[in-house]
Image 1 (cartoon, rainbow, N blue to C red):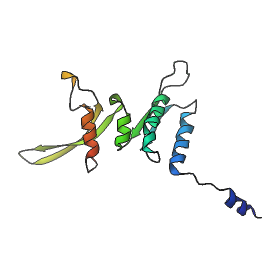
Image 2 (cartoon, rainbow, N blue to C red):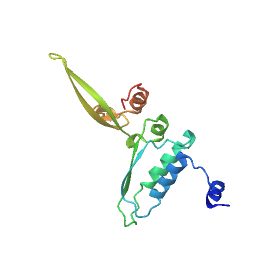
Image 3 (cartoon, rainbow, N blue to C red):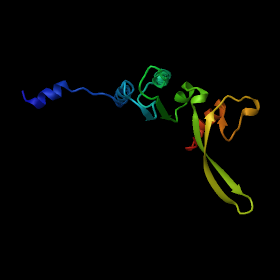
Image 4 (cartoon, rainbow, N blue to C red):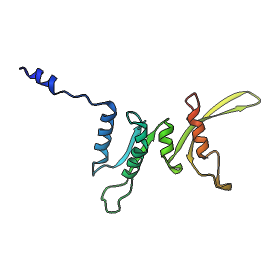
Length: 148
C-alpha cells in the first residue's frame, strides 16, 4: 500500500462552519489575546438555534478580568442576521445607514453614513440621529436593499 492510499482512507471532511468555530475557539482561548477581533457574519455555518449560545460565548470572552495582566479584549460583529440581532442587547448594537439630504432649490442630493447605537427610548434622552430603538433595528433588517 502506498502512502497516498493511506491518506485516502484516513481523510475526513470538516465543514466550513466547524473550521470557523475552531478558529474562533483558538483565538478566544489564547490567554495572551489582546486588541480587537473583527468577526464577520458569525451566523455562517451555525445552526440558528445555537446563535444565542454563540453570542453569549462571545460576550463572555470580553469580560474584563481584574486579575489578568493582559488588556481587555473587544469583539466587533458584522451581521445582517435577525437571529444574531435578537441575541444582542440593545446597548451592544451599532447600526450604520445612509441618510440622503436634498436641497430643495437645487435638488442636489448629499449622502452621509449615520452610525447609531441601540437604545431603549427614555423620554427626552432619545436622539434619533444617534440612537435607535429595537423596532427600528428590526425595520432596518427588513429592507430589500443593503440599508443596514
